[in-house]
Length: 106
Length: 400
Image: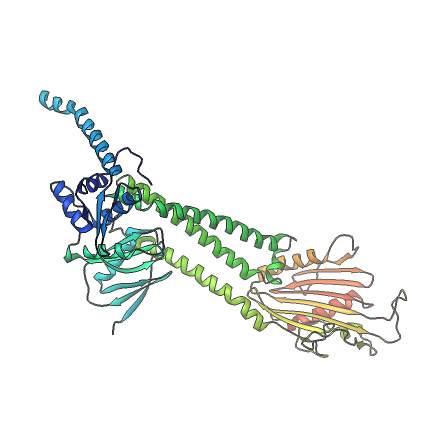
């Protein structure tokens, strides 16, 4: 299923975020954990699935493949999608100010 | 050397969680999965271990070595595969990271498989309808299904079509289950790796096993038939056969056997032959043809030398409830409209069901008793009553 914009899964978002610096599979799992401040520990199956799918959708590409380790990087298309998602998420947060008001009055 | 144990596997291969749970329970008993097939799973006997098993689905029959290696680096070893189902295992104490941590993402991995199974299911349904329709047509087209089943030897083919329907049903359920799984995952519901497997599993497995045995049986039947079925020249005298002989009803010392006009490649006189056949529904079947002539005697219309003939079909059925429907089918097959043959007797104390027809020199008798059905066709001067008396005498020879 090709990515055509719209809300990303959490896994997609964090993998793209982590790939702002080229990286390979095993380290990516750790980077995602770091980027999410330990909130997300992504399983190898999920990561493998996301990488294969996003490579097919050209959101990421291979930076290097020495046969043993594949190093992935985000593509310009991927970065654009990531930034769009970021703007969308930001809008979600902004729209949620009502909750903070609720807390103040509560 | 490792000792191996084979166990009947749960038949519903699409029930991922139940399988994973089953493998774990077996490992806890010291049985470690090695291989898995259609019906059985092979385990190596060893020390009981706490193991986690995970099934990974692919849209192709293989999984890339890269994926296997990646999982292995994370503590998951590749154990076995069954079709597009790939099984990984990890000891609990290794504390390997869970393979899938995002059900919505896992749902994406099933997209291709879901599509493929759907189209497979549609193809199976079309093929099943086509083949079953074809077999059904053979069975029902001329309105004599029992005769086709028993005499035409169509039982095994129809059992195969039964298996086909069962397999198609399994394919549909499998495709539907994967579709549901995909939807559930997309909605955030993850697979229960500890799902209870024992509840209905045994019953379903036994059903699958029965269908497989049925299929094997159906495949052997034609070969067994080939060995059992024989045709030979009818001996002059056959006191042990429960069939009426031409000489017995003609009662004419001048009656001679027709000189054979046609020999098959196997030296059988087809005008005076005895065929013995076997079928699961009718283990003993005889079919005979007898042709004679009386030198110097003419047919009533002076159309030539008097040459009476007698044919018999004898069925000893596996189940006596088949006797009446078979007898009715025999009547249906031999009574096409416009032949003018008339019913002269419709009962007889020696038989359960009885019909005798006559039209000048043509006589036909249909009789059944217990699990035996006999059909006699005669052309000649003898009275139908003489044939009936002889048939009554033969009842004692019948294997009821």
